[in-house]
Every structure is written in C-alpha cells, then in structure tokens.
Image (cartoon, rainbow over all chains, first blue to last red; front, side, top):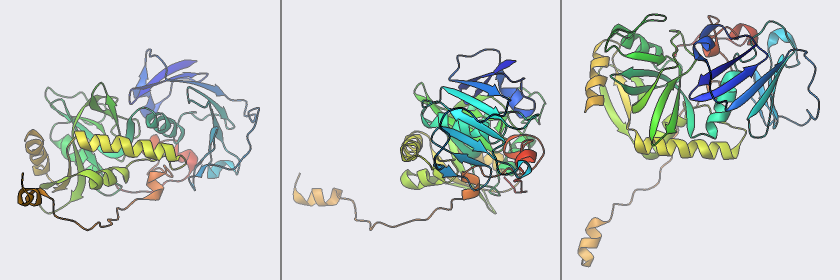
Amino acid sequence: MSYSLRIGGICLAVDGAPAPRGPLAKFVVADCAPDVKVRLRRDGARPAGELAGPPLFDSGAVWKRFDDRIECYSQLFGEQPYKTAILSPDLSEVEIVMRVEGLEPLEFPLDELLINALLTERFGVELHACGVIDRGNGLLFLGNSGDGKTTTARLWMSAGAPALGRAPGAGAPTLVSDDRVIVRAENGEWTMYGTPWHGEAEICSPASAPLRRIYVLDKAARNSAAPLCGAEAVARLFACAFPPFHAARGIDGLLGTLSDLVADVPVARLSFVNDASAVAFVREEAAA
Amino acid sequence: MNQTENEKKKKAYLKPTVTRFPLRPEEAVLGFCKSSSSAGPSGGSCQVVGFCRTAGS
C-alpha cells in the first residue's frame, strides 16, 4: 500500500496507507521524486525516543507543534493525540503514528501543516485565496472568510469555468481552488497551484499557471482596482497566509518570499460587485 | 548639478505611520474547518477534529 501525492509541486511518497479518497485523490500522481517520505504506523504505540518538552506552538484547537513532531487532537478522542507526525530535522522523512483506526493519516490538519512547513524552505507560501486560470494567466483573489472568495469562484463559474467534476470548455477559465492556493517562485517566475483544501464551493484542482495578478477582495457597490505596493501589499498577503509562528526563521523567510512576490507581481485592492461585471472588469484590468 | 537641482530631486519627508491590518488568528493557525462536507478546511476530517463552524470564504 503506497502512493505519491504532488501538492504545490512538492512530492510526498506515502508508504503503508491506501490511496486517499476525496479531494486528496485528485493530487495522487503515478510517480514523482519524493521531497518527503511518509511512513504510516497503525499500532498506536507512542514512538520510541524522546517525546518530552513543551510545545513550540499550540494552535489552541486541533494541533500542537513540537520541535520534532506535530500532535493532532480531537474532542472525540480524549486528551491524547489521535495521530502524531514524527519529523526528521530536514523534513525529508515523516512517520505518522495513528492511535485511532479508520482515519486517513494525512487528512486535516496534517497534510496542510506539512506542506506549509515544506513551502517555507522552498520560496513558497499558501494563501487564503481563490485561484483562477484565465487564458493561461493565474489570477489570485485574496481574502479572509467572508471577503468574497466563494462569491468570486461562483462568478467565474458563471463566466464559463466548469463546476466540480465537469470538463472545461475550450477557452474557459479554470478554477484551482475557492479557498487555498499555493504560490511558489520557480525557474524565474511565480507559479500558482491549486490545493486539495477547498471552501464552500468545493472547488479544488492540481492545475497550475504563471501568476500574473493578485487582487485583495473588497465587496463594493462598483468595480474598481487600486494598486497596493511595498509594505502594505506584504501586510495584506501576510494576513492571508499561514505563518510558521513557532519559528522566527520561518517568519523571516515568509516575509522575504512575500516581499519578492509583491515586487514581481502586481497587487491591487479589488472592489467588486457581485455580478458578471466583476469578471469583465478583472479581465480588462489584467490585460492592461 | 547645483544645490537647487539637488533640493528639487529630494523626496518630501513623510512622517512614519503605523497601519494595523486585521489578522484572524483562528484562520492563520489552521485551527478549524468550515463545514463537514468533505476534506480539508471544508472537509471530511473536520468531522474528526470536531472544530467546525460555518463561515463564508
């Protein structure tokens, strides 16, 4: 039982688990050179060695990060972690110990936490955003909950982007996610990747494209775009990222990545109306 | 280049200001998932972790 996943251009080779169901299944690939080897143990035994010490970061809810591991918790399974990921220092190897049967080991929040940790070292960032590929150009619509990511996804679906499970028509835009998008610097340009971590519209795709525009969403009575530059643009992106709060070096790296990103890709506050005119406005703005 | 031209090219001094940007801690730390429909932030393991809430995205 083994399979490989590629998320945001990062390859995870998983051993000891059946292929995943649901959104993660779309990210299974036949073969890839692994960035991380993930091994599963279902015996539930606490791993050998030192598991002492206080957490570096406590999310206050479902996970805690220690120097050498991530522990995941659920109200359903008591005070002990229901799964624990033991991390090698360079994150090239991960052992997941499951205390509870019948669960997929890489499901929320472990898959997302692992990919975020790996992105920090790879000039990448996961952003709370809706991603659209329109005529080959990656467009990122950034916002926290309630800012209009799902609304934006539905507007682009109305403009021809296919609904979940449907094939796109010729020239139609492609939605890569309605909630989480990965951006990475690769080969001299910025690439936007879809992720398995969708929002209410349940849109997720492994598709990728060169990133051309970043819009910070702002619901409004009329469509307009105002450029954001420098520190303000970085701050807006940081507020929609998933920073590694436990690691000063990681925060430093994230800020550096975001600084480089806003220097290369235009960022604007997008005030938009909830109708088809918003899509037409963005197409015109992006083409300018 | 004389003194007057140099002075013309200088940028006007702008007093530093502090701008606050909203950060939503519960979202930034992957502390919950939004619904129990499938997987990920809006996904099946949300049923496991038991920290779900309905929120627009």
